Image 1 (cartoon, helix red, strand yellow):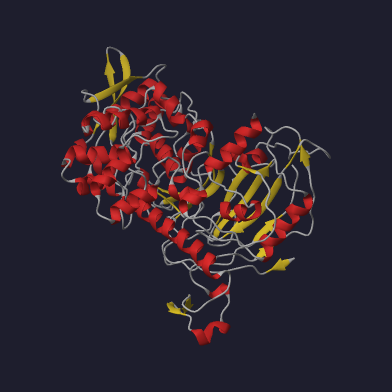
Image 2 (cartoon, helix red, strand yellow; image 1 turned 120 degrees about the horizontal axis):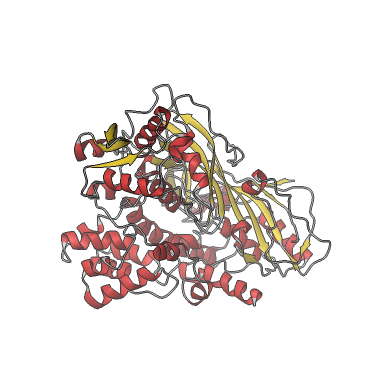
Amino acid sequence: METTGMSLKRGCVVVEDSDSVAPAEETKKPKIAECCLTKGQDGVEDDCVPSSENEPGLPEAGVAGKGDKNSSAEVEEEEEDGLSEEEEKEEEEPESFADMMKHGLTELDVGITKFVSSHQGFSGILKERYSDFVVHEIGKDGRISHLDDLSVPVDEEDPSEDVFTILTAEEKQQLEELQLFKNKETSVAIEVIEDTKEKRTAIHQAIKALFPGLETKTEDREGKKYVVAYHAAGKKALAKVRTAADPRKHSWPKSRGSYCHFVLYKKNKDTMDAINVLSKYLRVKPNIFSYMGTKDKRAITVQEIAVLKISAQRLAHLNKCLMNFKLGNFSYQKTPLKLGELQGNHFTVVLRNITGTDEQVQQAMNSLKEIGFINYYGMQRFGTTSVPTYQVGRAILQNSWTEVMDLILKPRSGAEKGYLVKCREEWAKTKDPDAALKKLPVKRGVEGQLLRGLSRYGMKNIVSAFGIIPRNNRLMYIHSYQSYVWNNMVSKRIEDYGLKPVPGDLVLKGATATYIEEDDVHNYSIHDVVMPLPGFDVIYPKHKEVVAYDDPKIPLLNTDVDKLEGKPPPVFASEGKYRALKMDFSLPPSTYATMAIREVLKRDTSIKKQTQLNTTWLR
């Protein structure tokens, strides 16, 4: 059954969101959906040694190695200590539901107040498990990205698998410190146990493949063979090797495309955090990665990534090192990915423990199909702590730089890492950026970057200090405030005039926005109004069924990794304690799935409200 829902357009303030990213100038596209009813930490193995190299900022979204660069990388090149075991553990601890429940924003706080449908809402729990919210990217060719192939393309020029296993963790650590000039030695000597020519060759290849900038030679010392690693031409040679435009130029096969494209499956990490993790373990800068859009953190997501001159073999090895990540579907291409090239995202969402009757659920789904939903900017846009990102954005636009500094660094309520809490407390007590920095083992975050800027430029030059933060992160605050204003404008527009065009509304004529005149109102519908109400065309399956389940901890759908591992799909009983609504639908870029779900439930989808539901249910 195919119907036409609302299909209006949002103003050009969109640069990035947590469901997907599109360029500001991109026109809204129709959204295709299929909805049906059903009832129903990163870990590291010893042989993978992460780089302790400082990655000063998040990657610049878009094309790597061309045009715009990672702004923080341009400003400074500074080392930082790696995480201790305790700090790594703390870094990966999940956010506390109890803390999130007490603090943070509700939809009312960010202007999300209106619904367009008249059906009766019902309760349901969103994202009770990460597998309840699964996102697959839709590429520019309309193909939905799936992780279904872990094999590595055969390439005779790749080194053997011994490259990844022949060096011990201690040797890798010594070589990394040598590579980054962190030790006082000028070389590292590795004894060749059970000496053979093949063994020596494998060690030479391993060092050159894993530690660009180092050269090797074989030496005899007291009757024993050693492979000695050293810098060929000092720091300048290393710096050239590690630039985004020319990494590993000396070893990349000319017949191979410069970019390795792969599908990234991740759980509980947003795209930029995931790239930071990958770059850390590959010992490269994050701005050699490119992607078409960012994906939500509290979900399982599948998307395409491209990386400059890193082999599929090296990428595939990370599958042995990292939990909650899988990389596959490798191919070599001549070009990177560009921000906004995607057609959208396909969502598979499970709402657990729904309270609505079958009739209420059916009415809600019919309403979504026939009327659509208000495409508000979702809660991900505004942060999860008690200091909303839009407040920082407003202070930036007002040139209130002392307020910007205080909002980013001051102590705040809510769930945060322990070291961030200590850093904020130190800042509040001393206003000393160097003292506060010492409390941060991880300095790649916004707080660490701002503190480094204040340490460098002084408290009287906050603008320059703020400039150390990567451009994408700085823009995030501005976009958050734009989104806050947009949400409030839409709610006010619907409250005053309803869902019909009125004189003074904006419509597009070609690429130009013009006002609707009194005599011209009858020529337009709410579909034509530029600002308020994106909806979508919906295609529904013809079958419905209602399935029950008893165990709230079991997954209610199979992920790509489940299918790769051969796990059978969930089996549901004919009757059970709980019922779940499963929704499958595709949306274009810059459209929030949570806002479609909100229209179905007629409930607040903020983390604060959802964790209250979740905690009550679990108790």
